[in-house]
Image (cartoon, rainbow, N blue to C red; front, side):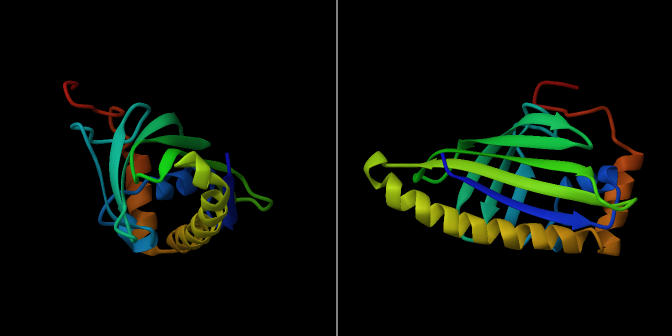
Length: 173
């Protein structure tokens, strides 16, 4: 499967870098140029393993994804549950590690996918790597800007100060 990766170093510690990455609307829209609409589904109110989200991209494409890993402040992973017809599979993971200087974080975002139909895969994969790579580079640049945005940082700090009871899904709580 093709893999697309983008890496940046941000001037905040890993716990805050992770919290910025998990901000929700409307704060999310300040830094994430890829997302036009995003919200939890199935009654969830917080991110966590098994929680699903609805995302509409700037391209108008819709995907429902599920958190398959949730380990603040080091990593988060997701997989596509429902999405554009041309993806047979789609998944991604974001990792956050201490940076080279104190108080910095290296953020690594990696996505993998498989296109369909199979007979178009050789061409579709190359196009997908180019398009997705471009979007991920723009997105991680927006994330880096968000890590310097006072409003985004304030929201992330509030989330760190009040992490709540954990993910809440429909039928729980």
